[in-house]
Image (cartoon, rainbow, N blue to C red; front, top):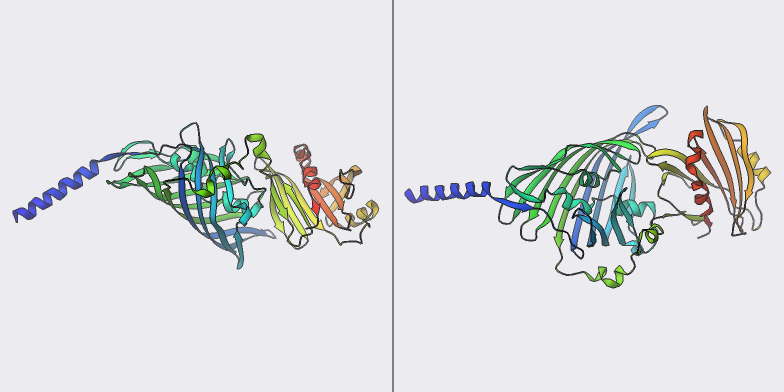
Length: 439
């Protein structure tokens, strides 16, 4: 009996000492650090779509899986991660919206991705060439591992101790373009010889693609005292998203499970020969940041800046919206017209006759009516800009007819509010002149 009591006393002493134990919770980031990262994502929720003035809820669900190795290229000025190079072994997602399923996989020639912090957020691109919007979303919209060191307090902590998560790490972790306010806090749950278990919880408000988002975070993590790294994180995030210029309102809950382990040596997929592909400076980087669009039927393609967002697509139509600092600036609608015989083109007069049939369009004044020369003489472009009213609202619409040498024809309509016209500043023509016909 005395021996049993002595054991209980010993256990009590051990527990008491463990609860008082403290350890350093933080990462030291250096160039050349390499990690294996595995991510899974599950999403459930609903989209709120306005159909004829009535709000309709559409059930959505999604699942994604990512597996990649990443190498830290540069730390940032605050001791976190500034730039990494990733090689994806797997990147895929499947989503279901109102009964319709969409699947995405990363192209084999775009599995090398750079992620780097900028003043505008984390920039993702491939040094092997432009990504499609879907490939960008697949590689840029999973949990941002660059924020991991920033989630930690970088100090000695003990059980029950809390710390505020900084605004930059919060914005990165929640995948926001801008942060309005945050009360995100970490808290130590246990400290053992193996590691530190912690939670991160709290409300966050911010903006993504011009839409305001209210977020509730409930996350748990594990920090290894052996490797001195954050090795596990389960991040649950509930979003209440208002309608924005590039997407509908939504209520969603996402659960991310991340496992991360430091690699003892640099993987061959990220060796010096691979790293030689990286652009040398910001000017060179800009050349890789455009996105590419390829028509599903191979009729045309173009590269475009990321301010344009695809918001609609049918067999013969493509709709993009231009956002300037999250604000709607213009809408471009590309319509594939009937292909003519090689060398034949729709005349400007015929094009104007076609435009006369636009429903709910009341033209008021022609601002421009001209042919636009191309360096490639095989393509021809006619541009007609008119001020008027569409559905009763004052707008400026530019109608463009692009013709190719084999009878290809593409009509493009650029619609913008009059007070936003100056903000286009040639970005509409950059989009049009990038279009190439054929596969």
